[in-house]
Image 1: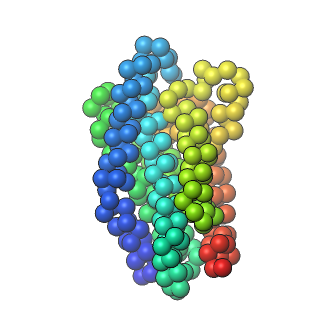
Image 2: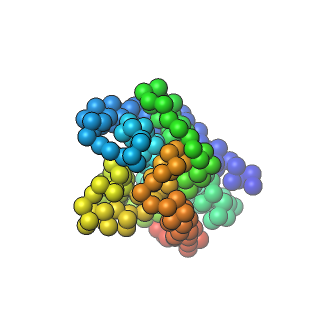
Length: 251
């Protein structure tokens, strides 16, 4: 457990030492989204009947920040270690694959939660929020961060260059988060796009997280919870399997 704790501590220090870039910057970005979208759509958007659009927007921005930063933490750590060549020191250690998995994903979960809490602290001043089911909020935040942390681990192991990692980020993570109902309720979408949104696993993470605030969502929170658990099992299983086989790590 000493090695696991050491690697976890190293991963935490890695993003906390550049906190202005890894924590403050995404919080400012979320604040800008809130100012722009709330100003443009408050008078035109109807969500959940009684929920003001600005209040509806804040949980979506929080979860988007959690997901993107959890992914960025593991993926950037792995690809930087590969490029600089210091990954060998981690692989030569007596750490077991599951310990590597827990340390990397655990650090990404903590970074995601810190950024999400930061977004809440700076945006809650603009509109009062309700916390109808706080436990659901915490559960979905952790499940979302761990799923994207595992997905970042997969991307970091698979990618061999920064441009491959950028492609993963630009063509998978960013479109999936933006098309998951962060800025709108999918109930207002046309039939095709509504059905397509229900195929996006990120939609269930955001909708379940938002249910914790308002007690309302586009789908049942239990369906969202099942989708989040299945997503974690799939991404976590693939990432752990790659670590155990040493895919693109030990050749």
